[in-house]
Each structure stands twice: as C-alpha cells, then as structure tokens.
Length: 431
Image (cartoon, rainbow, N blue to C red; front, side, top):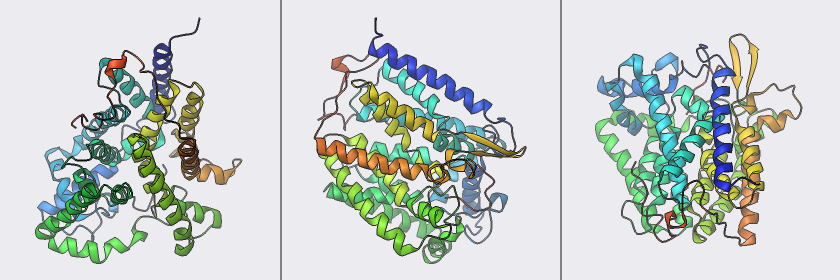
C-alpha cells in the first residue's frame, strides 16, 4: 500500500535533514581552523569592525579591517551594523550563526506562505526540516561559516514581494536591502518590468534616502565610496577565480583569463531582459515565489562577481520544487538533483586546506568546466525550464501536505497580504 503523500514528504525531508546535518559535521572537522563550521565568523567580524570604525571616526575604505581585508559594503551598511557592537567580540560568531539559522527557517516558511500555505504546526515542521537539510547546501553552509548577511537580505526581499501591490510598504525592503548591499537593486528593475510603479518608486526613494542619510553622518566615507571604491571591482577578486559563480566568471573560466566587458554584457544583458519578462509573466499567473526566486538567481548570474554564498536563492527554489512534488512525484528528482549539485561537498588537498563546494572540486576530475561553472549551468537550466513552463500555460497546484487542510490554503487574493513579520583560503575580499 502506497504511503500517503504527507507521510512520504515528512520522511523524505526528515531523512535529508539528518543526512545534511550529519554531513555538515563529518565531511570536515567542525573545529578546523580554516573551514570548520564552528570556528568561522570572518565576515561578521568585519561587519562589526565597520560599525566600530563609525563610532571611533576611523576611515572605512582606506585601511584594512579584520585579517587585513578591505571593507567593501556601502557606508550605510556600517550604520546598520552598529548594533553588533553590543555583542562581545568573542560571542559575535555564535550569535550571528544562531540568528542566521532562525532567518533560514523564516525564509523557508515565508516561501511556503508565498505558495499559499498558512503557518501551522505542519508547515512549521516541514520548514524546520528543510532548513536543517539546507545547512549542507554550499551557499547556506558558507553563509553560516563566514557569518554573511545573504540570508537576511533574502528574507527582507521575500517579505517585500509578499506585500499587497497597493501596500505603502512595498518597495521599502528592497530599498533598505540595496542600501546595505547593492545587488538587490536588480529587484527595482523587476518591479518596473511588472509595472509596479509605486513599489519601484518607493524602493528607489528608500535607497536614495539611505545614501543621503549616510552622507550626513559619514560625509568622508560616503565621498570615498561613491567616487572611488565603488568603481574598484578588483577589491573583490580576479574574474577567473573558480569561486566566481557568475556569467562573467564562467566566461573567464572558459577563456582562462579576465572576461572582456563587452562579451560579458553581450551575454548578460539579454539574459537579464528575458528573466525580467519571465518574472513579470509569473506574477500575472499568480506565482510570486517563483518570480522573485528567478530575480534573485538572475541577480547572482549577471553580477560581475558572485561568490557561492550569494546563491542562497536556491533555497526558495527547493521549496518550489517540493511544492510541485506534491502532485507530481518526478519533481522530487529535480529537487534531489538540485540539492546534490549545490551540496557542500569537500575535497582535502592538504591537512589544512579543504575546499567546499562542487565548483572547487579538483580541476583534474572529469568535466572540470561543468563543475567549475555549476551554479551558472543550474541557473540556465532553471531559466529554460521556466520559459517552457510559461509557454505551457500550466498553473501548478498542489494538495496541501502534512496537516494542512484545504481551508488552510490562502487564496490568491490574500496570500500577499498576510506575510509573517519578521573554501578555500581566499586572499582577496568577498562582497
């Protein structure tokens, strides 16, 4: 007798969660100085140092910060990071990791809500299991290790896109996220493509306000950033670094040298335009989660430089695939393939150098260019799949899983209103 769908879903997610957490702690010594999941926190300490420099009137962009690395975020971000000064230096890493894990759970839960599910014990359990499983996904694992801010920005963006179209708050989240880290500016273009003029204007206004406010508080650093630092992409890392999982990085990997700007733009701009059009179509078809997820993945793909931890947008994509699997079992294969491709597989080069991620597996392995550009390849497959999906005019629906009854689903008219409130040794600087 076949297992009920809700039982099968719970068993699969439970097994994946147990396997993911086990692999997280066994594929690399969790206390290994370089890469151990329990001894990271490099980036969050740089964030904290940015706030410290504001308080002590020290230059943000001229002198190196923690471990001799350069501060690359906007001046506004340093103001946002001021609360980190309340956390003792020795506890910053642990505090940030716990916060990131809670945010990861919030991302999964919010993704399910954007698919129309209410928050119940069942949806919370499913979200918790999937969040645990995702700790072994390289983008999430690396975000947790370095103490990055990617998951938090993604939750803000998801919250923003879950607001009703006539909400006065719609756009504020995008503006704030872009004020901290410029990549979310892409979502303003997505609002414009969807003809959501008010949201786009609100996002632009919020972003400009973040610049203006910071210019009043930090005039010297603001001038330095917007007239000089902003244009020096070399502060990040060379194009051809294998961890550059972007279209520009793929070009550099294939040509074994810096990617020509004209070639990168020739490929990236048409892809971005197609993605914007597809995202707008998805919104009209009442698929907000897939639309914003496509936007997040596209922002990573067309960015000049995208580290693996920028691709946390694979998490809501996994949620979407699991949602589809509730009515068509083959979608489990797609979810499994995605999870295996983005998992934090390790390779030990030396006792002190263990790489993390498919794109950092040995270059002498079979199909090295596939491995090295795996995230871009997954993105292109996803883009093509969405194009086929849009062309088929199919509207995916799924019977609720776990303990969700038909009355626990949100209607399309209300689902956007009831949003919850919310490795290698790298000598170069990540952003």
